[in-house]
Length: 334
Ligand code: AMP
Ligand code: TRP
Image (cartoon, rainbow, N blue to C red; front, side, top):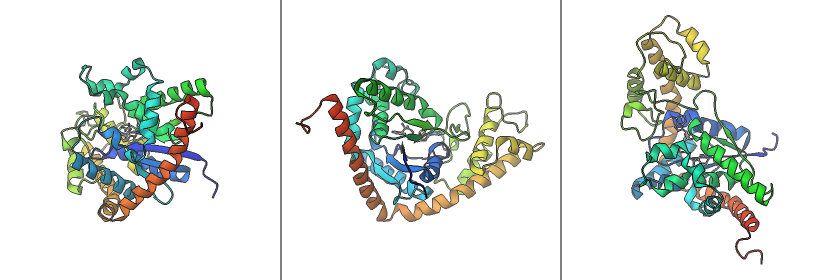
């Protein structure tokens, strides 16, 4: 095997209801990229507290994501799996990036605009959220960041910051990372409202398929998914967003292109497509669910996270020191 030289980094918030959008946009790539690079996968609990969280629930949600990482096939002997708040470098580097950013560029982040709804009582943490994300990425000299489409703007900001700071202190300050987005699955839409993206927080359970949903719930949500009245199975995201979303999910799970799926289903109704899609999704999620049930209660989980935090800290401490030196901070070099 050739030596893996690229470094891969990504994170998921421990906010419950991890769904097939998270899986197809991000998690599936996490698994595949283990072949290509040295992978570091974080559970970003500091991001989760940008909105108030119940502490006991947060603690459980952190372990849920860790168990899911293992259940989908991330190998903790090779990849590093850890919890963000176990590594102090994230908050430290985030401050330095805060001091190199502009309020204007943060105000333009669409995720902030959506979540704050323009009000001046939006939590400050929501505003500075992208800087913590940039710190996560830059802290590990990451080359590649697998994420869903909704994170594209945050990755661009991370790149802008890295280049800006490199221009000031030298190109050996930060590695400029690249986002990695999949063709199918990068933006999965809500099943009951294909104009909105599938999200963890939508009120209706029928809007999403969570990775741990039971099989009857999965079937129900797909059979009830919003389509349209012309009855034609054709991919056209603009005019037929519901059917196109189903085709896109089908394609991402089966590996068959949407063009081939259109041919397979020519002349058939939405009912047939939905029935088969439900089967494909159930079969794909079944092994994940089984693995998860085995892992979630095991002692192994805490050990994986402890080992991961040590490994992550080992990298992060060096990078923080390097960057502090560039800024002229601290007394370590006296
Ligand atoms: P989050 O739950 O916000 O931490 O998101 C974890 C990962 O899932 C990120 O890489 C997101 O870009 C991705 N993601 C979230 N929602 C979707 C969606 N509806 N479709 C595709 N990817 C998504
Ligand atoms: N902001 C990302 C999301 O909501 C989660 C995240 C935080 C992340 N830090 C990251 C993703 C670093 C990739 C790399 O989905």
